[in-house]
Image 1 (cartoon, helix red, strand yellow):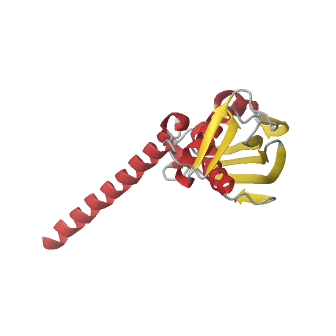
Image 2: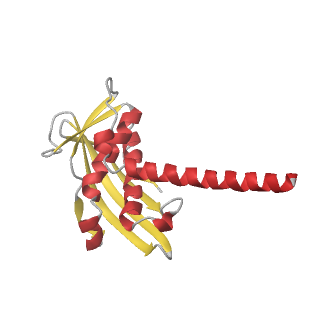
Image 3: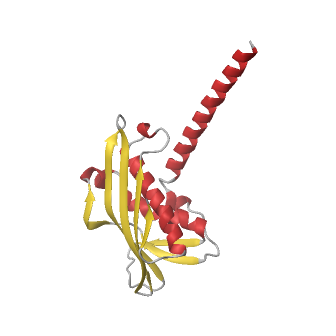
Amino acid sequence: MQGEKWAAALAAGGLMLLGGCAANETREADSGADAGAEAAEVTDPEVIVTVPDRFAYSEDATVAEAIRRECELEERFPGFVQEFGARHDVRVETGADVSPGDAGKVLMVEITQARNDGNAWSGHRSLAEAEGTLYENGEAVAEFTSRRVSGGGAFGGFKGSCSVMGRTVRAMGADIAAWVRLPEDGAHLGN
């Protein structure tokens, strides 16, 4: 009898653990949807950098039309850099007409590739790549390339393709925010 109680308690604990992981995963994925709106205010930043309010696809980007049309990566990506910048004492300001020649530090980023192979049945295999240049008062200071791959994380098969693609640019946003604080020319960020 005692053994059955322990087995039942362990099973219930395992279900709560899995439920908690799923809940955290959902919250994390949802929190990135409006990352710019939820970004913490950096009151005394080490670095202030301006980025465009959209990180456009490069002219020769390899991106399926469905991803371009449905996933809103261009709009979401700068918000992720802003969100994670706050964690690194970097204030990321966005603007519609940002150019490399602007005064101060300016970060220009282009998405060079975004792919999602697979589906809910076979598993997601999403990949995103970007490259960027940090300018200071119109002069190029450092460049980087960034790449992230995701299978969707816990319960990835239950997530949509755009959700999994969002995980890749979110991770890249974190990588880029850390890089802006201490930029290294020619750095390759991510995996």
